[in-house]
Length: 230
Image 1 (cartoon, helix red, strand yellow):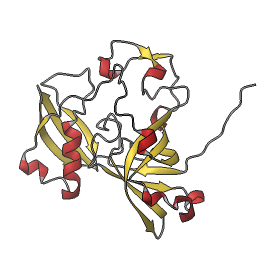
Image 2: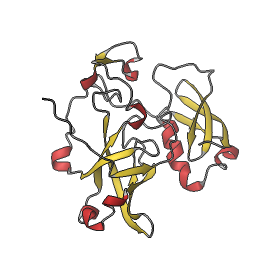
Image 3: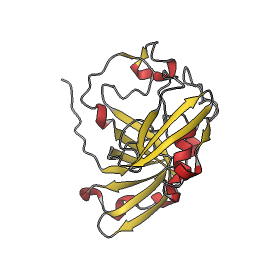
C-alpha cells in the first residue's frame, strides 16, 4: 500500500520576483540578491534556530508552488538544450516532477528578531519567487555538501556574463539598495535559452518595477524601467 507523507510549509520567502521570469536559473548565481525567510506561526520559536547563526550557508527545501498542480512527465525538454531535446525528469531540475520539490543553497547573512514575525532569516543568492513555501531549512556543510570536481552532465557552468548597458537616467529609478542585484540578474541573461531574437523587447518585474530590455550578441540594453509591477 502506497504511503502518503503529509507536509506543511514551515516558512515562506519574500523576494523581489513576482513571477518566475528573471529568477536566476540556479541559486548562488547572483549573490547580491537579498531575500527574507519568514517562519509560519507554529515554527517561530527562536529555539528552533539555535546554532544556525554559526553557518554561512543553508539549504532551503521548497515547493514549486506555481507548478504544483501540473502533471509530471517521465521526460522533459530542458531550456538549456533549446527546448528541443528530451531528458529524463530525474536528470533535470524541472519543476514538473512527481513531487514538486526544489532545493537551493543560499548564503545566510543574518537572523533578526522581528516584533511581529519572530525570527527572520536574511539570505542572499536565492532563486525563489516571492511567496514560495519552504518545507525545511538545513545547514550547509561544505566538507560534505561541496564536490568541486563533480561532473555537470548536459548542464555545464553558465556562459560568461552579458555586458549590461543600463542608462544612468533609468538606473536612477531603481532604489540604490537593489541596483547591484538587478545588474547581476540582467548579466545572467534572464531570457529563456531558446529565445535569441535581438529585436524583441523582454520584460519582468523586480522589486515592484517593470524592467524592459533587449539583447544583441553578448550585450544587454535596458530600454525602460517603470513602476507598477506586482
